Length: 361
Ligand code: CP
Image (tube, rainbow, N blue to C red; front, side):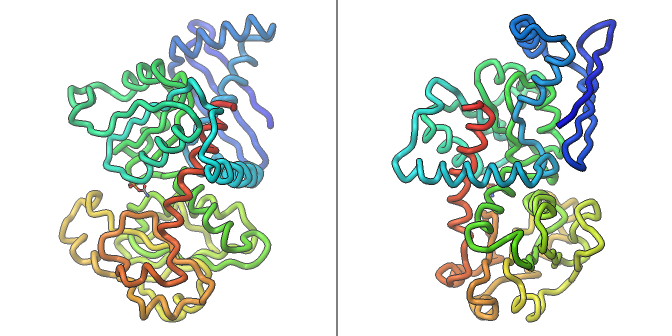
């Protein structure tokens, strides 16, 4: 791991970090340092007898934000999968006290059942506590407060923040202003990286990913469905994974998530059903369509029936991030390929592992 950092001389509130990990190179410009973060860094600097610059750089790298699937190397993924398996064992024993005295701030500005409640469950099972804002009507955001201000304050109340925003990219903005780690629970039509980790965990449990060829088909609203954006990125870390994107043209996978080896389809054929090892279905994201007519044209494009699922391999996995509307019939739920409820439950050990990493416990 290597990084460079320059601080603006006239006021040490702006910084540039150049960060390299393996083949990945990222440059961050922190336009504003929060006073809390700067003060903490200065105190640590004094304690650790190191330069302000290198201390600040290491401080940033120690902030275990989870913002995008891009940030994970294969080694990170292996470590998180291992830690989540350990958390699953701890869960079976009723939990732990390793986060005793720590507080999770849950800021959810879009509806959520699984992500918010599994984050909260994860923190409670780790022995910590939760403060939660789950209805924007009762939040000062409804009075016009900007995320930069909210995050500074809630970051002062809590030790780690899980956030869901309506706006693509806003979790990264929050992280820039937060004095504590930020875990992105979905940013508009952007990404949902913690979901993609629980998706990966589900795949790892049932398939030999990385060691044998794995044919994964994404089906549904691939344009607005943020879970598929993050999962497609995560899967690039594994040898032998081939991706197929199945969606009407208007809601196909955005080009930034597609590479030349992927295959693109507009219809869900028997061949796709019969050859896929994993099918990842998604809901049509009605709330994100600008044109309701366009939504009406695609809303029933794919509806999984028992007859369709019977065509899948017996050991294949049918996944869905949930909630579903009509895209998988309830009669499918009892079939062996249907693993979407197990998938959702995997959110607890994954989020326990992420919180533990963020808090360095
Ligand atoms: N999968 C998922 O993000 O579900 P919720 O919207 O219920 O959090």
